[in-house]
Image 1: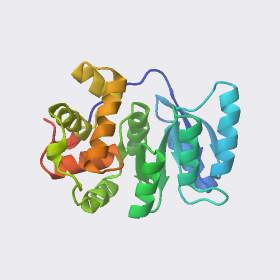
Image 2 (image 1 turned 90 degrees about the vertical axis):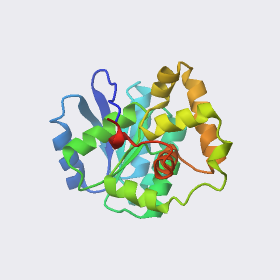
Image 3 (image 1 turned 120 degrees about the vertical axis):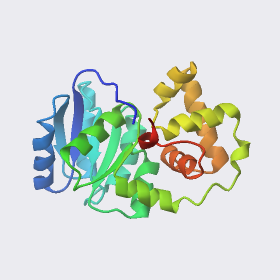
Image 4 (image 1 turned 90 degrees about the horizontal axis):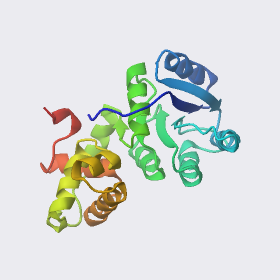
Length: 227
């Protein structure tokens, strides 16, 4: 996978309705040199309230680790609202459940990753770093679930232009829009436009689905297949 490009400490906000989980995650993130936990909440609504306070002080988190099943406001709803109100904040779902509807719901709401709560500290840190630079990090079991659910687009791949195929290959390698722009010597906005066009033409809803489909169809290699 492409390496994350980060400067300074990555500011993380934890959302989980179990205090012991928040304490555990906070404890092992404290041992990671480039990550600091700046706040926490026990449901989605309180998370929005506390992030809003941080925003007034110009102290927003970079990444939110979000549980999905919580009282008052669930994690998918909270993720959608965070991405709507603060687009620069990235969200990584972290939950005990691996149902396709939940995975798709979280990704469609704007989550930049999906982890299971049995993930080790290195996986969590990798997901946080990846989210910060616009990359997608999925638990291997979640990636397999999505790959199995992809049955191919309703429109043929031949509708893609040569440049869109090139962009699709980079997406499959895990490249962010910024990295695609650098590689192809175009603006980040142009890279984003290409990705949107690919999703529309292939009738897919996320760049993760596009990457999985490209690898499945033999049009690109995934991050772990790179030499």
